[in-house]
Every structure is written in structure tokens, then in C-alpha cells.
Length: 358
Image (tube, rainbow, N blue to C red):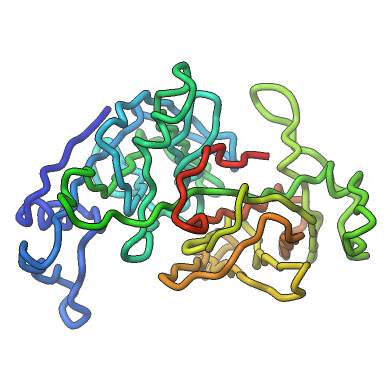
């Protein structure tokens, strides 16, 4: 289902009232939405929302195993996407459910290549001022059979065994039509790349002669998680009770040099942090820290990076992702670690988008 939201200042206030915080500034003294800037001071953004069909939340669904739905979209209007938010909406009350019922949502091509993605602990993304993802241009650059955008939303439920609710996953986008800018400058382009921990690669990876050796504390006893649709996900592994650290070296994570302006990470419950290191230069460039609910190891928030200045990223550098889990339970738990970067190619060049999905 596609829900189009009007773009006037009054309708932005309506979006705020509905809990769609994209584009809504709040007065810290009162919690009320601050008045919008005068129309002549900025271009008013547009909003659109996508919903899954109704999904049951009636038993325990662990990460990546909950009900989901895929919706095919018309992306022709999404010239410049500047922000995205995902909510799980209870069908009966039409109110937002807690973050613990949200697994992930993503806008992707038919072949699974992701453009924009949200996951547990990261349900809202706003690019720095002056930057946006050129979604419609990316779609037009694909082969004809891939010139379709799909929205996928999945719920989960890690802890409430006695529950019987119906819900929808709703994603709201803030965007601009290219014509909105008239003769003025366009935003700088952002493209997504990602790095995923792969347990099979951790065990089999052999560094080349020009690369540093793999750290000695790389985990080599990971089990793969059986999936309900068959097969095993090599991006999932099991963490026994206690702390566990995994690392993975990577290269060619971008097609050309550029600058990262937004970054976030995805982990499962019991996750502590995920770190990105430029091994070639020997320095940490980003670390995402997980926060948990006070009474259980449910992730409530994962810190992110957003900067107009950004940090450089290089095609020919070696990078390392590192993930730390601390399993405080008495049994093994499933784990995942993914780093997502949105970068602007040098010279603000348009590139052939692949999303780099390992």
C-alpha cells in the first residue's frame, strides 16, 4: 500500500501529529513541534509512505524469522531522498508498537540489491544537509527488468510468548522532486555500500601478501543458523554464553574514492559495538555502540554517524569490521553484524550502482 502525504507546511505538521518525525523539529522545552521555517527560506519536502499487508505477531519470532511482506512501488517521483523512517503499526489501535517488534525494512531492486535499509536499533535515518540519494536515477540506470523498486518489511518478537496482535510495517520517505530546485543547485549524491560479517569467510579467509595478518582472536567455531525457508545463512552465527569478538578484512568496498557522510550498524540482541578500521592507515574511522533495554538485552538503539564534512573512504585501502557480543544468557544466541555506509563519490560523480551486497 502506498500512502501519499501532501507537502504543504500544514501537512508537515499533520505528519508530526501522526508520529512521522521526518522533517519535524521539536521545541525541547515543550515537546511540541516547532513552527516550520518560512516557505521562502527553504524548499518544502515531499512525503510518501509504504505499508506491508497485515502481519501476525502471535508467537515468538526471532531475528530474520518473522512474517514479512514485499510491495512493488513506483519510484519515478523519488528523485532525491533525504530521510526515511520505519514504524510497526498495530492494526487495532493504529498506534506505533515498540522497537522490539521491528526486524528490518528495505527499499531494494528485484534482485535484492538494497538502496535504503533500516533494522533493529535504527528505525530512522536523516542524511546531512545538502546530501540525498538519487533513487529514481539509480532505478533508471538499471537493466530494464530491474527498473522496479520493492519495499520489504519484517516484524519480530523475541520475548512476548503470550501475544496476539496484527500489525503493519510502515516506511515513510522524505524526498524532493528534481524540479523543486529549479535553477538552483542539487543535493550531493549519496550511494550505499555495506560490509557484512560472514562466518564462513572468517574461517577460510587467507590474507594476501600485501595485507596484514588476521587478528588471533577471530572466532573460528561459529555455527550457521538454519532458516525457515531452507538453507543456512552464512551471515548468521551462534554466540555461546560470554563475550565473543569477530573480525573480517575487506577491500574494494567502493568503486571509486569518496567521502562517507552517514554510517550505521546492525547487530542482534547482546551486541555491544561494531567498529570500522582503515587498516591501511591504521586508524578507527567509525564505531557504533549498542544500547539495551534496562531489564533485558533487547537492543533499543545503535549509535550512528552523520556529518556534512564526512570521512574519506578509498577503493584501494584494506578495511576491517569488528563486532563484539556479550551473551549474558545461559544458552547460545544468534548473531549478525553489518556496517552500512552512505558515501559521496569524489567529484560528486554518478556511478553504476550495485549496492555492494556481499
